Image 1 (cartoon, rainbow, N blue to C red):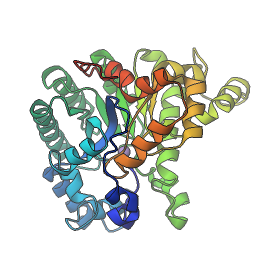
Image 2: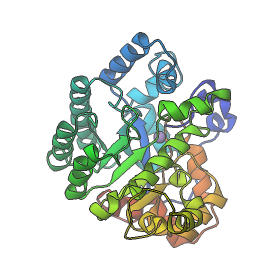
Image 3: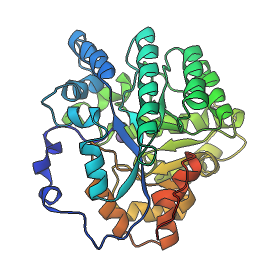
Length: 366
Ligand code: MN
């Protein structure tokens, strides 16, 4: 999930309404890998949570906007084949890898969560069947009920042929590194599909510290929450147990790539009195073995170059974070990035084809 609020209105970026698809734009097979959508059933469930929750909740604060039919993103989330395809065409984006917008079904009561996840996955599979060249998708699972989450993950991958699983960070304040969720991770590893850990607002304890100036959302809190989640999967020993699990993080890795040196140094050296699992590898070795990152919402060349240097271009994929951020900014950023052409091909589509098992284009274009 990206930025929300009035700044999302088309007026924010005057270029967006003026510019047309440039005939000079170089053609790539652009596959955008963190693109949000919604279904009325998700909207209804979240609207009920907004109406019945009295205390401040950072996620519901945004859901109040998302569920508003007059708000800036509501109609864009519910749309697949109208505005969305037009936007994609305008910027020569061939495919959206869709996922039910954060917080997925993770705030709902378990029965509701299971029902909405099933409906969402069925409808996603139908949307892909209708536009197989334009859409692919990640399944939603009811994490709060691990046996049903596993069942739905298996159905979504084996029967519906979706391309992976998305989980929106914590569930009821708990991370996937806790033992009760390990069977879910084992199942995802066994299905041989990636797990995309998408942001949501931090767990309540952390969010409290970010409340001042509303730092608990995309400006800082999402990254703090999701980076911590990604790190705890490493330090909790999960990846020694499930070494083939592949995890995708958005927003250029939610801060983790920048911190690799210090993670390795501190995890290896400062042990006295610390009770934490011994790991087979260093934290950075897990990041380089088990993690992919996407460019969602982080249209910045210095970070991209840094991530190519420390992780390699094989581990980076293009994403827009539609409808929270714009096609134009994401495409112009990567088109203009001064990186090797072969890396650009990997980031725009080759890695996504491999990681999410998306069929290669019939003709490769250029
Ligand atoms: Mn997002």
